[in-house]
Length: 418
Ligand SMILES: [Zn+2]
Image (cartoon, rainbow, N blue to C red; front, side):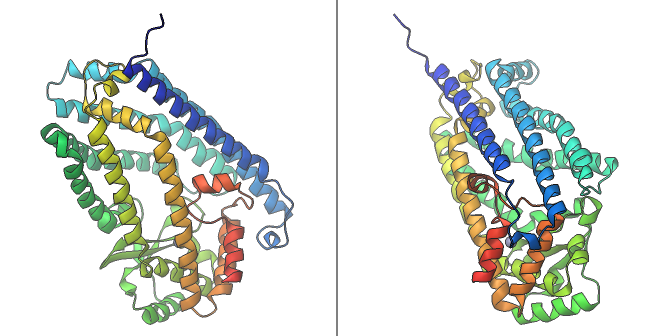
């Protein structure tokens, strides 16, 4: 007689299949994107690139394609090896021999995983910055800056993540049944803090933000901000040029604590009118309350995840699936998130489509509030695409999975239409 599969083996089988399917689907979509990008240069697109630049953008896309294929293969193989060969269970028992407190075992376990993942990612990050970005003329970072960034990012994720993890594991240990709702309230408070202060606290650790200097641009910006009732004191120029030549702008914060940041590279390459049109787009994100809807959406997702966790985490088969007979918060949580892979892909699709919709709204706001913005936004977006060698023909599936902004040609077409 064939023996029925144990629940923990069934979970393990589920985890391995989900990770594999996720990898294969991702690889297939990358492949479609790579094969579909080589199309004749249309009349609309010829305003972005000449033939030579267009060829260069294809070459850049192919370099990224090869890089993504190899890194995701290595990451998936490492993840599957850790799951199948029981490396996670081994680390858990190694820590148990040295630490008695269950909560501290959880914190040490995750701290080691974060550190190993960060160190493991260094070669890929280094190659991406100093080989690919360098070859296409984007890189401005130095080796010293690259390693300083890596160390700072690791220190921040440990300093912020570990106390939060400790608190959640403690809530789980003490409450079990009401865990999900109490942990959710903690996450709401934490994400409220991060939405409001996150950029203001962490960005200055990596970049210098300074008020826009006096001059023609500042006057144009002052005039626009005055018409919109947006405080000019919240407008900053950021020294992005110390890492990359690429251009960008961003809005962050909530309520009275808000920031609009313009990259110095953007200010340098766009005309004054184009810069104000882009700024008007960022003000649009604020006026259309996109931060609030993103905040609500992200907390709704957390609630769903925690409710599922509260329901499933007590099952000892989760830890067992990863090879440990000792039930622990951290191993069960990792097994849970691996099982959650299909749902998290789905949630990602919704978030991206939501974000792309918001981009159209912000473009519309720029047109509605800044005279001439339609044309200025049009030429600004073309420059932005050219300066970062954007793919003009991304595959629709690739867009759904990876794009938080509409593809450039669709966005330009929309500007003409609205
Ligand atoms: Zn935007």
